[in-house]
Image (cartoon, rainbow, N blue to C red; front, side, top):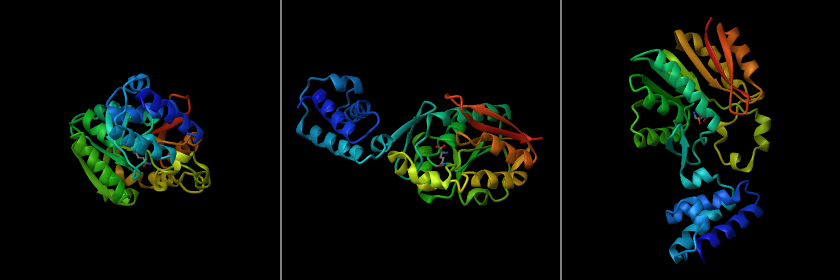
Length: 277
Ligand code: GLN
């Protein structure tokens, strides 16, 4: 079979299986197998070798089982860098890049030697971006999951980022350490909503998604530890669920902060920024 033809046949199969973006996905998978750019693959008249055909089929089968495309390809771009991902971590989302950009600016403002923390670091996309963009800062990365930290470590090595990895249940991971900047994209989906997620999202670690009855458990725990861990003059930057910004900001004001909420690309209030009042 020709490469383009195989792409179209796979796209038709993926469409039948309910995959949201079948032509895109089949092009990406074919690109992985042949080394051609995805669009070139979709147009190519070259015959697939038997080896390529078998490799392509194996990848398409995984996608038919609704394994996320990023996990099949093994990478996801975040702020212009390629992060390794697999089923052990949350796949970095585009809106989280906005949180990273704000965090980078805040960390730059603190000047040389500032201490930053990425709480619930998962793949490491936030903390590693901070460490690479602000090399003079000292960045700690914390997660409860040993599995997630293995991916964080892999990404820190892959991207040559100098970061310290800490394992523990939220604040337990950092003992008595204090920071100028704390950034976190914690699990925030209400438990009940976790039962009806998009098929691909169900393949991501539940631990990285599930935020308690109202989804706010981690924000309450973050607020409770702030006195101990956020230095005077420090900044906390959080990602929140689509309807949580006001409630999270309220929690933080009750903990003694002043707050500001910021929108994502879809004009959803997606970030909460807090400083000591
Ligand atoms: N910090 C990672 C991210 O933003 C992981 C977040 C998580 O596991 N909840 O993608």
